[in-house]
Length: 376
Image 1: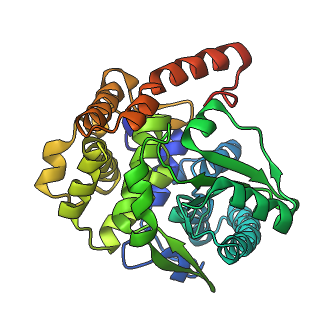
Image 2 (image 1 turned 180 degrees about the vertical axis):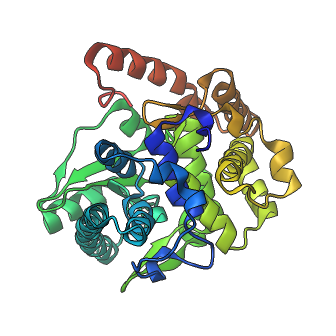
């Protein structure tokens, strides 16, 4: 059995094999039937080494990394081919339950998008649909319309309850809603992106660059490929400082199946002060993919040259792939802040300068109460 990279757990190594070794770019999951096939055992040694007591942890990780459908589909195939009917049936039941949850969430999402648009709010669905045919735990939307209109439409149309806002939510100009009958929360970003709402130019261009994506029999407006990469980078490299397996799989598939204009991506990301972060994130993804497939992603030299570090700095800890904050993430933050100062964006500079205070407060709150929800 291979030595798990990044000090990964046995189950996370198995999950990574299922996600990165069981598909090819010309086989989109949404078009692939769940039929048993003879997958090469040598590619799935960590999967085959699992025991009955590992299944609960495997599912827990798949849930937290938003890869339930994509990981358990090949798991089902492997077990069916191995005549392990008990595990195959377990995987099929989990997949069917997850698909039912996703179908219900997408029905709500379609209605919410229609209601907001009918009310004069142009809406782009961000982050959540990147994981298709999986789905994120929240439904994330972006609109440039005023928040009062969004709140009114959500309350009148869906009897939505407005969740308490953290300090981070207020800075980022985010609003969270809970809807009767919907398990997922609905998070609406209004006019700003970034942890402190510092990214206004990127937010303003989102709708103009957006495209239509077909998910089953539904169509949603989603960010263009370059904008999607920048949004993911902001979330992972500048806010959470950890990477989910879905981020790696989503990004790898995006780069393998779509043509990325790297010159335009570099120009846009430099204007936003996050080009080094984007380049670093893409390099991390490529390095992680290489550790399982033997080959990384085809990244241009400008990405490699601008990356501040690579996948060798990742560490699997507390269920996620962690990015070291000091000095690595701190340097990326300093680069973003410097860009705003040079651009004379003083209001956004002030917003972004609050991030270390916010992070410190969140860390203290988590240490005292076990949660940072009121802060972060």
